[in-house]
Amino acid sequence: MIRVTLDRPWLRAHLSRPMRVLSWAPYGAGWRETGLVLWREVRDRDLGPEVDALRWLAARLPEPSAVAMMTSCDIGEWQEERVAVEEVTAHCVVTLGLTNAESAGARLGRMAFGYGTINVLVATDAPLSRTGQLEAMSIAVQARTAALLEHDIPLPTGSVTGTGTDCLAVACPPGGRQRHAGLHTAVGEALGAAVRVAVSRAAGQWLAARGIVSGAGSRNP
Figure 1 (cartoon, rainbow, N blue to C red):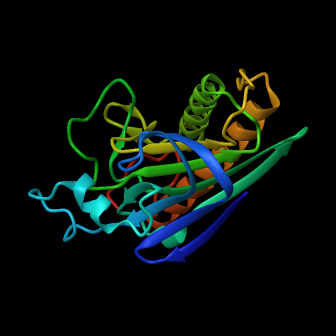
Figure 2 (figure 1 turned 45 degrees about the vertical axis):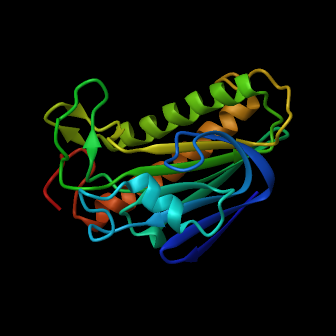
Figure 3 (figure 1 turned 30 degrees about the horizontal axis):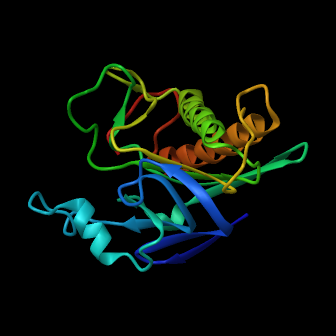
């Protein structure tokens, strides 16, 4: 459903067909029909305080019809997971950094260690309506958060539930009428499992690379 190619500074997620993508991505936010979702790897030298990050990204896009996200993570460490439940398949691609970690409802007011973000794309072949796609987005966010809570990474404000700059995109075939995508449905189960496994694996990889033991707290990497 998703074919990933790495061509630094771009990570490209090629969808198997044009899909309706719902996101709050820096480029292509809201609903957009496209066959391509992009990650742009950035460094401090790219985005100084005087740079308009959204214009900077738009000016460099290799494909204007895409949805595009930005990350300071090593995009070569992306993770993916594909899950099938009954007749529904979900496929998730994740890049993850936790240097900008926060706990929902109690912000630090500063970045924990610097820049970092979690960018998630999950695609399903379920023919969701726009309302169903909104519900699917809520399941994906739940799954992202659940995966992080399993690693039990404390901050002074509580357990890490995400970062201050996370982005999430949900893709499905356009024109669908399936209204429900909640936890009781096959699409909710498939989508939730794909996101939860991919995010958990990516978080474990990020923590291990910095010598941080899950549940031991956020030690300075």
